[in-house]
Image (tube, rainbow, N blue to C red; front, side, top):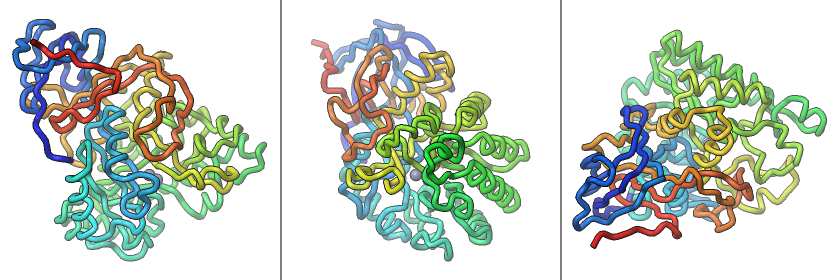
Length: 441
Ligand SMILES: [Zn+2]
Ligand SMILES: [Zn+2]
């Protein structure tokens, strides 16, 4: 993240909600030098020489943390880069993201990681952690120099975009992990089963005549990898869970004592394969695919009971020419950083499916699986705060995007709930243009 002054400001009379810290109620939040200095009774904190944000009627949450984004650097800067991707994250209320390594070329060496970290120091709006690939060039054969890559500052390892096809290779990676640490983040898919599928295998794919990707393509690989992690006592994080059987597999592994965590995306929590009947690849083509209503309900149950640790966007920017083609040929992936909270708030909180506190907790839950401290509003902590207006309605894309790409799964939808301001790493990372600040005399 770009270096700058720690923020000094007073968030006046905000509704503060930090379920993990047990904070729920109106407070003045005093941020001094980029640190949460004090939570005071509303209207009581001294505002002298402080920038004052009138936050009455607004909510202050611990800022969100996304363990799964694609910043497309190096090699695909026409889709996204560190500057636009982290601006997009800041606009979504995030105070940190983890960038995937399936770039062009993939991030596979200590020098690759060092170059990215340097670049983030120049241009990132929020702190970025980088993962490196598990296998050289993501070819699935030879391991990268995991220990040297960790020493260069990689947070963990992932071949995301592709599964690790070989159990032998994953087993060796788990053995190396014992020496060097770093969570292994796994894109779970059996390529023999997903083959050339373009959407979920179910009644919608049958009536559209499109090749399907069955749920077992994901769940069987999770079962295999959880068994390997248990056997080697490794630490794995399962990415973008999409199917009911996958939730069951993770739940069973957790009960058996495997060191496993997992994430689900807003689009898998809010949509089903019925949306694919529109044949709109911009919004509804991604991997893993949108699945059935029963799968979606199982993901929600997994969030509720703690099987699913966190919400992650799998923010995957793509260029227009990869999406302006027939559904079968279009690239897989959607963007999600700017809309994650608002979409879940609109579709799942306002409808009474999920509690606001649970959503706030899981939106920041992606830090701990990677050994990063969870954002909190506890006094004494670095300021990582998302200020939201839960009543604001806005149309996604109407004012453009911070992201360089347009493939938002929420494009043109009107959502309720908006991030007005984000403080990340102690600095003001984002302010909605129309959100003005009152400055104390
Ligand atoms: Zn993936
Ligand atoms: Zn991904």
